[in-house]
Image (cartoon, rainbow over all chains, first blue to last red):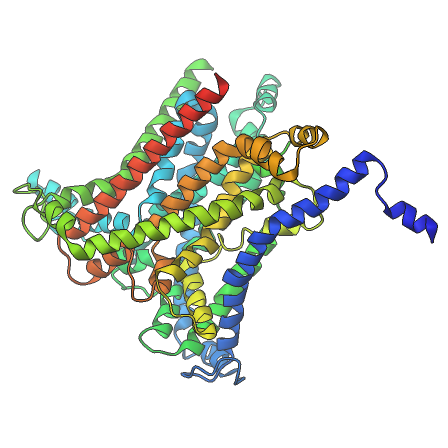
Length: 301
Length: 266
């Protein structure tokens, strides 16, 4: 008995400090935990509650039915089409952004030198401009008699192509909006590649392609994966691009959720759809995050 | 070798500058449209004028909306930074039992589609009978912004030496004294960037505001409503003003941060 008590009581200064740090960490995390508990977990519970409520009612937590899910998974319901469109947009966005952002991320780490902080700020700044404003700028650019069309006509050409309100322009809008979310994790990832290692490989006679495939890519992978995950998840949930640029020619999955909540006033059905999408995104995110070491990513050596 | 490097570097520079031009092109188009005299946009602009800017500044409705946006962003900044500073200490400074799990859970709101999060919160407010207004929007913004600011400050926390705090404890400082005299001054650059992030992300947020402001309206919400129905050049004018405001704040914030750092090292 006395032995147990002794092993548990912190004796040395180091142990005392350790015990103090354990509790201090948990205490510091408490405000965040409370905020996210009330603001994030509780609303998800509310959505879950609504998802099992009687369709077209507000009987949350008082009725239980699987009818909403049955409606969703009924093959005659076209909601799976929206889901496919969203997945397709998201996958294409990720693929295009990986190619667009890689040279810039590489440049920020290796090429730009003292200009790198300024260039980073220039890429961050659009995040502080509402995406509505930026996407509407593209409407003004592409619209008939807009900047592109007007310039081409002024040059005596036939005028700009009609790209607005097509799926292609929606994809373009997503690539445009989510560039920073791919770029910065990728830059952090590439920062993890020790330059000495690359130099050593080159001295040993490795070609550029071999260095890229065997050293740079694998070592930068955690950052690249976070970027891909982030852009994929954000693009799956994106609505503004399809609404403003796509002119609602394609209904994406979050737009379907909104429609259920607003026009059709069917909160339970919208909730069921939100639950399905959340489960998909949450599963994917947790799976990917469980494979990553955040301490290493963000700078603890 | 050197020559191929030069060519590669030039290609990377060229690509980056091209992407930057594309990034700022729509913002420039908006600014252009706001100086167009006629009600409907056409390019090349036939007659420039600042009428719409004047009308936007004079509008009482827009004045109220700007005030709402500023109030929301200020409150979000204050609350978020306080919570996120402690959150960042828990994220990066202390080794505690639940840390690995905490680091992952705190990322979930960032990885969550904001329109769905906004709707979920609307349901939540509704379920407990809270009337939505700009004050509920403050809370909604925080759910998304606190995790972002926590990450921003955590990067600073990683670079900080915990033995400085321990030395202060050993010299007899109280917990509050250590926080005020050692921890906060060392973390100040991170906290400062966190404040800028919090304000600007709240200022530009649309999807969360849409569902959680109730009868009140923020700038991005007003712009969206007018884009869908009832375009006037006041839309790009207010959009450009909001952009310029954000740029001015970022510039001023960056300068203050730099001056403080220079003074600290001098």
